[in-house]
Image (cartoon, rainbow, N blue to C red; front, side, top):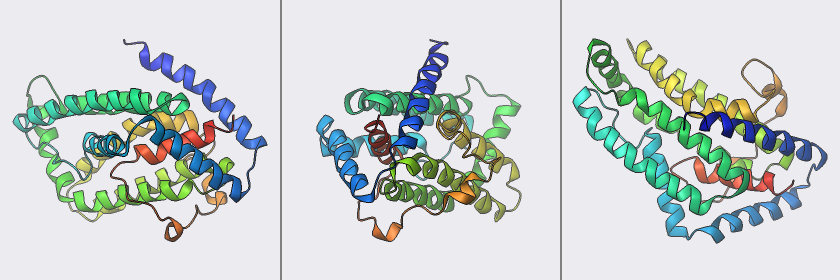
Length: 263
């Protein structure tokens, strides 16, 4: 099992390389984007009913924790948190196998593994001074929860708008808006005094979840280049008439299915 993430990353690297090659060749008109959008959405809904997708979205949001659960502030609190996390992890794996195919399924596997890895820090086997201080720092994260939730929700809304962008720009927009979300998190923590340690812990948690996917799919659209500055804005949120999702997973699956469909 310890080689699973390495194998997955190798497979996904091949997938991403092919997706970008095809996307560069197949720049699509807005009418084709709309058609592909309907196709990808119907592909997702044909695998699972709306009630199952709603449960998938709800449980992924809880597993992600931001805005959905109180972060444990003591070793004792962490026990209940970790039991629920393991239960949610098992359910998410079932949803993934039932509702996802192709690249979306492979990418979701990486995200699920990354979340499980990120949660290990919150599920220590025993309490020591380092662990106790770690959990004490979570009080700041709970205090800023409403604000960080708004940052995440804005990113989720952006994902729903991005699916209306030309195929070739969808993955770059996903990446660039992710970096905007990180900036939003940082700004909110800066407003709370004496919370720099909590901000670092929270930032590491988020990056542990997303960095593998970012490294696989974003290529030059990263924090060390100016590609995002030259990409332009994603489609307007005002024109996005869709329900608000609680997690990022279903909008991302829609985008992956749409890009995958162009191969």
